[in-house]
Length: 166
Length: 332
Image 1: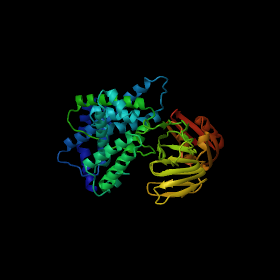
Image 2: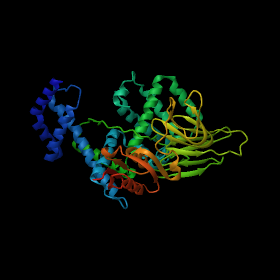
Image 3: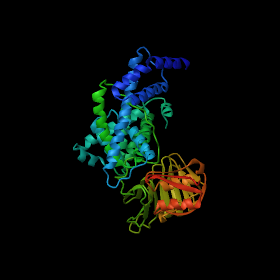
Image 4: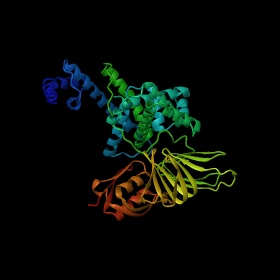
């Protein structure tokens, strides 16, 4: 779609500097801001629907916000995971490659669980990560078995929609 | 199923039907084998094409979720990291980006041979790398390979073993106590098998089940319209639709029960997949050596040692990045 690309180019020329500054003000870090501004345009290029350009800056902000959240999610996950394995007795420091692999997996799971209520999320993670029976989850969380079943069903429905919604 | 093929379905099952399918799947997974419940679920599935569609999707989803979580090397640390980081992220978002816009990223899905939520309800189960042997009351000996789980339900009419995950070797017992002849049945996700006598192996994969008869005779009861009799040395690939006879395998189907992997002219990559099922983490090889062939007898008790033996047989070397990331490379 040539018109799509022309739009992208104008969008980039007109607003790249502005977006960069906006991100810098959010992140407080010029290098990260430059990276994420780039990511924002890359994400737009990969979108197949036509761009809504009546209010380009509002639109760019929306996309960039998602990218900032992804960036923070990744940072928090990396920090929390390294902290978690550091607490373990006789842990080995994983190599950068295998760490990267684990981070990617964790990130995909965290994204998938985005938007779940904390209790739903907790019940679902206990079932999936720990393979814990519902009854035990109920005891650990201090809620009824019925509630746990409802939480798990909610989480599954959420995942179903992500996976199959048109 | 890819996103595109999922969308190729004409209609989407309604939210209500999807939720019903979730209920069925949770109920079946959290209770032991319950023929009545299975039957009711079957009945529900056949009531409408949308029911079946929703059911299949939930099964696929469960498998995918499970394989994704299982790939994590350390589930405790993962759980902690996911919970902890979600809280911190929530705080950060609340502080800096109060705009109420929820963006959900797309994710990559991986499929492997796993069925969800079955480890704890199984009567017998093994962990990755574990093998175990049980003597059942009728004289049947049951062996579980790595990462496997079964339930068993013996009553006046039948002796039923349900394979929930992995691979089992069954040595048929004579059942001397019972007066009626109780069939010895193994139910997998894809078919129903009856052991007449001798020993047989049932291995459940994501999309099919393999039956290998080592001695004596077994019968494939379903999904085939008429039963198929299988004798020693024969292998069948069974899906929910059909049973197909396989040519000879390049790996001895029952050797694991003696703690061995026995291969004849097997691709290195396939061999490593087998060995990998006894270990946590990643075990792979460079593309340029994937097709090297391997014949031999390898001991399973120490897979690190086993891999060292491989390096003495083939022109390859081991690269340990961590204890859970091992890769074979071409010998320089």
